[in-house]
Amino acid sequence: MGSHSSAAVLVTGRLAVVTLVSCNTEGDILGEISYAIMQVWKDPNDVLESWDPTLTNPCSWLHITCGNNNSVVSVDLGSAGLSGPLIPQLGGLSYLQYLELYGNELNGSIPTTLGKLSNLISLDLQDNLFTGTIPDSLGTISTLQLLRLHGNNLTGAIPQSFGNLTNLIYLELQWNALSDSIPASLGNIKTLEFLYVLVPELLNF
Ligand SMILES: *[C@@H]1O[C@H](CO)[C@@H](O)[C@H](O)[C@H]1NC(C)=O
Ligand SMILES: *[C@@H]1O[C@H](CO)[C@@H](O)[C@H](O)[C@H]1NC(C)=O
Ligand SMILES: *[C@@H]1O[C@H](CO)[C@@H](O)[C@H](O)[C@H]1NC(C)=O
Ligand SMILES: *[C@@H]1O[C@H](CO)[C@@H](O)[C@H](O)[C@H]1NC(C)=O
Image 1 (cartoon, protein in one colour):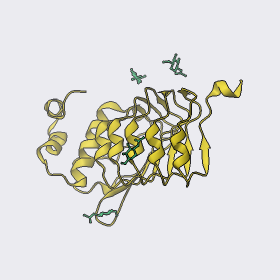
Image 2: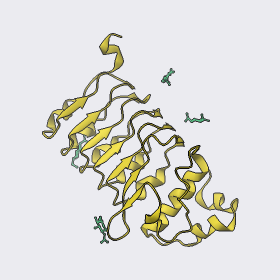
Image 3: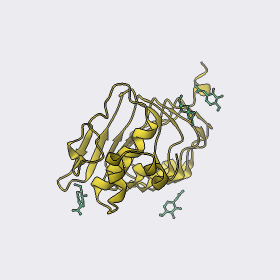
């Protein structure tokens, strides 16, 4: 994908409007996200049909939930038949609490920018086709209670930074290709009730 401005040159007036309005409201951020997503995601079931980037209030879009000041608090697109990469702009939804994208065919790496979602409670990316390493930045989301990354093809080590997720209750990393050492820092998480990090090799299948 090219830069935002060069991409905008290619499109019709309908979408170009979004890039001309350059204030920082949630609506603009979501407009930009929906524009970028339309370029790179395949949506065979038309679940994103209502995501019209020209609407001033995207809170009417399906699969989006807003708080009382039009802040986006939830994106619910589990098992929606979507494929393509996650876009870094998702990290701009600063009030987001739930990012539910499980059970799709999303691929590529998990963007480091998701670590900017400082109000996130649940990040569920299970059962997709993600590759690459788990970004250390996810360990800075101190509000996180559920982190589900299992059933992808993630590699590398479990970040030491996860020891800073002191509100975490569920951590599921199984069914990836992660190295099999579990950082001692996870012992810092007193809230943890469910930890499932086994690599398939250890199960002797
Ligand atoms: C908007 O709403 C969100 C969640 O409902 C809240 O966290 C945030 O502080 C509010 N922002 C403003 C500017 O009122
Ligand atoms: C993601 O999937 C698409 C479609 O199968 C493919 O063209 C693309 O190369 C994949 N990207 C990565 C990073 O694997
Ligand atoms: C997972 O990644 C490894 C290394 O890149 C690759 O050899 C393997 O085929 C991948 N497995 C799946 C199920 O995509
Ligand atoms: C945990 O957070 C503290 C304070 O922000 C920081 O100094 C430390 O480097 C973090 N630990 C890891 C392993 O990232």
